[in-house]
Image 1: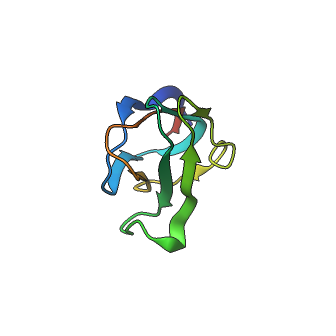
Image 2: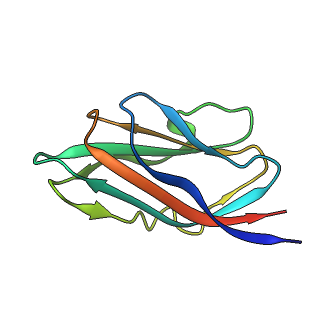
Length: 111
């Protein structure tokens, strides 16, 4: 078994359409840190799904629903830390407002 520490999702702005951010391709992955920052002057929301292989984002795999981040707030999603993605599983997100929230995800890939 090989464990590699990685940036799973490099810093980026979260889209306001459901978007796959990371897929555990040929590996299992463990989320160690998931950070989102609202860089605007008004409140904004983000939802996060952890979807199993061949699935699609929906209520059955919704981990965080419309988490409101106040202006300039940073949130580190303790509910996501330690979650495991199997081979082919993926992280999907959606922001309630375009161009309001940045995210970054770090973790480990296991082969």
